[in-house]
Length: 328
Image (cartoon, rainbow, N blue to C red; front, side, top):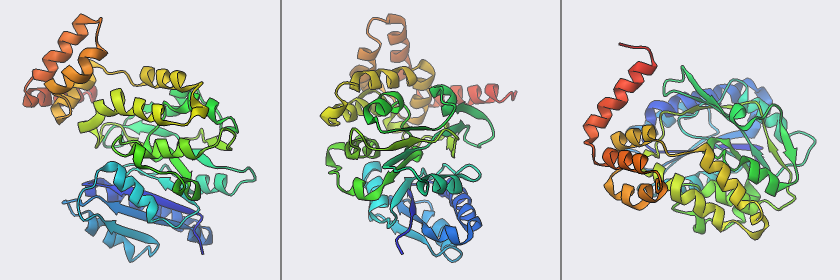
């Protein structure tokens, strides 16, 4: 039997969080009874050195529809995203971040949409962003987007213009047959293959749905892509937009402008990235000096952060987190 849904989890070095995500998914699937038999879980491990395999193997005995694959070496995020879908057998693939557990009832809610009466080629979910311990809510995507109910449309360019700014991996539920028909190579290296492939396979009149109820817990302070964050924000996101087919030409600038407003580069962000090793003097010269052109005070501050010792920025970051948490 072809599964209705494959929950595809690309992972690297996240054993600490992956178990919680798997447990949440498996418990929800088990609670569905016979309906859950149409759901499989696929984990593609990008050669993690931390014990990820043991975490997955420990759960396979109790959930046989859990597939595990280990890359022979780290092939980069995009190749691992692609591998997770390549291993899937489902009609639909939900690309779920390894540290993003589902909200209560998420699997059941998603299946309800996929089994509904309306045709669909893509489902976009929304997240609630939490701190790294999932204790404190940082942001709700629905609030940022001004969404109060589900959005169903066959006007894909308009959907893209409005929702391109919301592009977390865990929000993408794709039709596997359509995904497989797209050449992913132009998008490899952006960290956003899933975004490019999805919007390339959609026709201008494809039926698409945004689910307003948040179905994913996103660890907003646990980004594994910190080392490439500035590249993604200031370069790769633009590259993906430019690569998309001509049917988006009329809305590309509006979509990217909305994304740029949603994801500004702040001095706080630069301090965090410097502490994590994701920002240095070379990135300042190549990306931040042009970005802050005409804002000399911001440019000078960004340059200072780029040259600050990482341990100092680490201390600043920890002090800030304690202050936010109300700790002395």
